[in-house]
Amino acid sequence: HSFAARRAGGSDWGPIPWLHAMGADSGGEVGGRESTRESTLQKVSSGPLPWMVTRGHAMWRDLSWREASGSLGDLGTFLPLLVGLTVESGLDVGTTLITTGVYNLITGMVFDVPMPVQPMKTIAAVALSDASLTMPQIISAGVFVSAVVFFLGATGLIDRFNDFTPKAVVHGMQIGLGVLLCVKAFTMSLFVDSDGGDGDYVIRTFLGADGLLLCACSLVLATVPLVLKIGKQARCDDETDEENADGRELVGDGTGNRGSAAVTGNTEPAGENTETETSASEVTVEEGIDIDATVGEKKDEGVDSSAVRSTREKKTETVTPPPTAFLLVLIGLGVSMTQSGSLTSLKIGPSTPGLIKITPADFVSGIVKAGLPQLPLTTLNSVVAVCALSKDLFPDRPATPKLVATSVGAMNLIGAAIGVMPVCHGAGGLAAHYHFGARRGAATAFLGACKLFFGVLFGGSMLSLLREFPKTVLGVMLGAASVELVKAAVSAFLSGRGKAASRCGNRAGTGDKTNGGLNGDDDDVVPSYQQVSLPPLWREPDSYALLATAVATAASGNTGIGVGIGLLTAAATRFLGSDRVARCGGWRNKNAQAETGAV
Image (cartoon, rainbow, N blue to C red; front, side, top):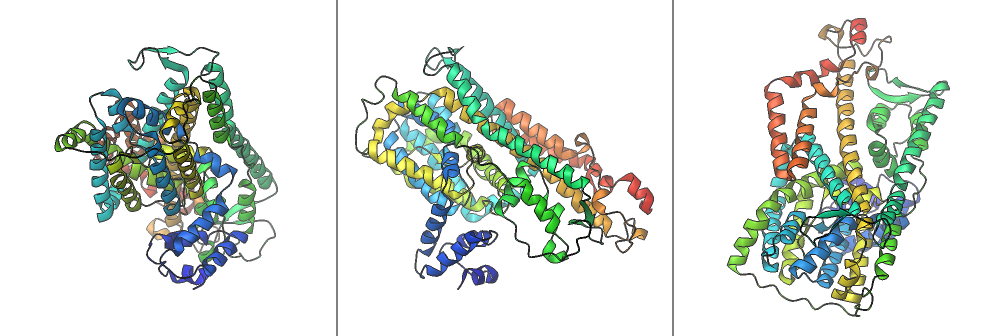
């Protein structure tokens, strides 16, 4: 069938069920990109692996300097833990690079978002702080966590858990994790452990290969994307003011629903609703613009959307930021190569993986010491939080909890036998990739190709070069990721309030006056979006759940504790009846109620 027929008919895409979602996603793109996808699908003959050819072509087309730079954004977390586990626990760098590179390639094929592959942080932290934890015990902890998460994903129980967890608690956990990452980045960038791991930190010198001067230069370079976003926001605000001065304004559609836009004298019918990917993701999250509330369901309502579309297209015009993460990594590699012994110890050829022998005693010890503490973090951050963040950043193609949980479990169960570092996905890594420019699965695949290249070329001898990588550069990259994670969580929370208010306003605008609503047939009725007034944040129960989760997560350093306190807070506020202030009636503008006679 043709691409359009498959998309319209909802037919299966063969042995890989999630490819249907990928094909449906590409239908939202316009112009040459959609025609390219369609022609590619038509050329691929039926067979067991047509999806690999299709995805490979799509990733090659999406690959750019921006995607390549964004793929390196998560190295601030990956490299320190990789080097630490290699030095302290005997992890093989070459085997881990090759295997995680394959993980990245498969992840880029399955998820059309920059889904990260990063170490399980709690297991790594326990291994670095407890010298008695051996490599078989580390692998046992990863196998235990992966088996549990894989079971939750395969049975679909993770979806129920995801639906049960309030969004405010998830966003609060993201904010708490962002704060923890920010503290870690601050310590890594400005201080050095003078006692070799005993926790006695002193401030770095100003000059030197890994001094404060390099930290300052890296910070300036890492803030370039943020400066460009702020400038774009200012330009959008100026354009909006000019349009309002010219008489352009949002109007209702005659039924009290907010959702159309008109320019004086423009009565042409609306065209087909074809929105670009940039409009759906970058504008909604980065600028806080509610596209659904602004444009509405045009294909159902048949309202004029040309004016809103022109405004949105202006606001989505962006200046392509420089590949800051790519430049930072090049600077870091340049500095590390100047250190003595970093290049002379390099050897050509991959490492020979060895089998890990796990005894029952190792298995039990690994579960107790590191597996149980890691399980809440993997379930909450690596599945629930990363899916929520992907939905906020890429609402047209979010990752599903079931598929993410299955992916985490399968990766570690496959690589455990040869001693691969336990890995997972994570919200912090996704925020890091996004901050530095990654938007597609091509970024994840590019990072995987780089890992494979260096793992096959140098193997375990890469440790000497990676050990000298400046911590100041890694700290700055980690700090940028933490800011992006907190910003995305706050924006998603505030956007959710606006959407809820819009829905309540729409319901209020279509009711009957005798029932306490507004008469949609009355020409004098003010559009409902003008009548919606949000209550202050301190009167909303979700605000307390978010704050409790964020503070508990940041203070305890444990996502399980933070989410537990957040769930108790959410339940308590609703049990006490404080959620009455968030009902639709509380969001109506009092002046509008007085004018329309609403109670």
